[in-house]
Image (cartoon, rainbow, N blue to C red):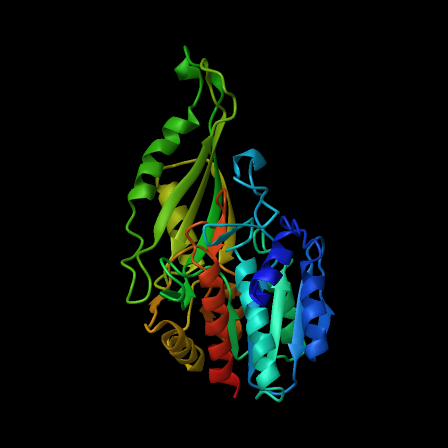
Length: 375
């Protein structure tokens, strides 16, 4: 049994459902403090954050990750208990195996091997962990970055261990992400009896033409790095649940994943103009989850490509797809950001898993990346 597999099993056994760390960060400290890392905790509200750093000089390479996992869902639907790691058919099953405790375990063991060979590495290495990535992400990485900036700690390279691979380890790396803007739109009318519509004002009917226009809007055409901006409605609720009542209001939840061709202020302005043009009586609450970010070139991308080619024999595809990651909080500081981690096919699903060979390959890639950047 390899060191990487053993560590991953230990991490999976800790039921760290967001925002509970469940002792994962203590385990990392136990492994890394003896190697010369300082262990600083920056906890905010119910979120546990960890800053492990070795060295004081630049450049600074940060491995960014999260110890929290999504809820496992009905335990009876799993072939084995979600927080009891089980090996079947060359795969390790358990919640967090791929998202993203597998990436954490692979980086830690790569780091241990690297420091055994290069105890006086060039520059500095840090690990930033949070227990708030799978939740609202309000008291996690964003807060740690604020602290680091306030005291003048500059991140040069940020490697995010999120499950970026599609079919096989390292076939895809994320060099950016789309922005994410959420909205809660409430349209007001007048409640009444369905038999007397002249005495009421149906907000669903009022919203319908505007909603059709919203969903058909061409926001942009994307660019060489990002696909076109898309709007998706996630919920509509009029609240009363009765078939003979015209509702007094209707609530709509929607999200835009937007390219670097747009910013949140422009999107908001265009949507307000559209709603106003339809004469709606409405309120809207916005939540910006993150702006688009992109690393187009630099030492980190070059080192990542070289490491994957050395271990796997192929070069990865640079991509900006998928959801959001905590890289969105680091990129605005000027750091180069790349996401490289396990295959993402089973993340957030029942029977989440990682291939045993994938785990060791990932650790080898991280090892080569460390050598490429810090020797």
